[in-house]
Length: 354
Image (tube, rainbow, N blue to C red; front, side, top):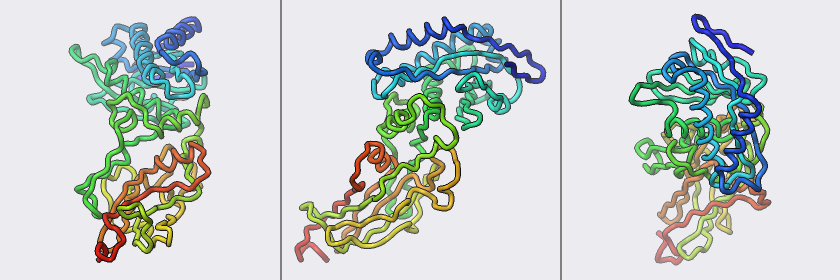
């Protein structure tokens, strides 16, 4: 297999089976909790832009750096012991390229599961390119003082992008800027984790369940769909004594991926029943028009985060509901409806209700 780029030489070097086996064994030895779990191994073709090849002393030197980087990435997945298998990303082959990184990332790699492209650029950015590419485009730079991309920040970026290959989603895309919230001016930020802040080594409950559900399979386009929701989602409104509030007005507002803003036009509205419950419209996270389309990642979902509002007796309460919470409920196999609660600062005595 070869990849041709105008004006640059191409040289594909396959890493020997013995080398790959040694890498896997070293990765397993490095993890304290890996011995009891199966190995989910994924092979990688690395394409390295010519500037990097020259700067780092040749293709063999780049291969050593990439293997070290993948060791670090694998430890980020495996050392915590939260996944059902040991995820092992193994360098299978390496080659030099010239020209566009996007063009290179689109080249087929039938003998490897994934393609990682190290593209010399003026800034550090990374992208996961969905099937049929199944590639990470790693655009970064390097100077004599700053040996990017092979530093800890680069390792975390690569772990984030390879988690996408296993179905994980950008949890920072759920964020709401309070200054752009037309409903109550409150902000929302997902918990600190690998898929949210790019710094942490912590994996969220949602990411863990998604990766575990995909196990060792290499995902096709349909495998990135996350339409995994309970059949029923309920809002329970209670007072300060945890008693249900009947007749509370409910509104549901939706936040779209990466938008940062929250509009004040409700997706759903109604009142709670005698048990203080409002059953929300189904598929509030999903765009019904697009729900039958094959799509990539969580972009199948129109809304990533909901803001629930309940009002009764002049008192108003709010609750954020990211799509991840009902999905975790679904992944855990619970047969019960998903329930989220808003507590209003009232007691249902006449003196406390306007």
